[in-house]
Image (tube, rainbow, N blue to C red):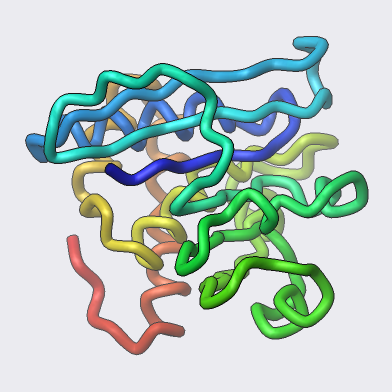
Length: 194
């Protein structure tokens, strides 16, 4: 079983990203579930969302304490705590930041043998959706996660998005996911899987 924690702020779409990931995994024949944990439940407040993906039935429903993957939608989270501390040894993180992977790993304490992937999802979201006080980084970061981990296919994410968005929002969501997927895939030197 793979466990994922999404860290973001209310309005960025951490909860929707976890649900899209779970739906994409389910469409590929995996067991999956996603659930949120809110603080004060208002726009801009810290939000955590969880997802579990497995080839076998998932019986646990507890919050995830140590994850295989950590996804950070808002780099400001690093000002209050270190999300890398929630990773298992050997885990991976996808972080919305303009900083490099090396800079994040040097600056913030982390378990052994973790991989860090960074992406300026805020710039992608701004280019696609326009300027916002809380940019919609969720699907851009989710596309980066797919490229970094190959836990699901990007075409499954695209299909799952159709259950959450329609029209222009669906088109923009797919575009943001594909742009970040392509960027991380290029960095990894792998061919784009769809």
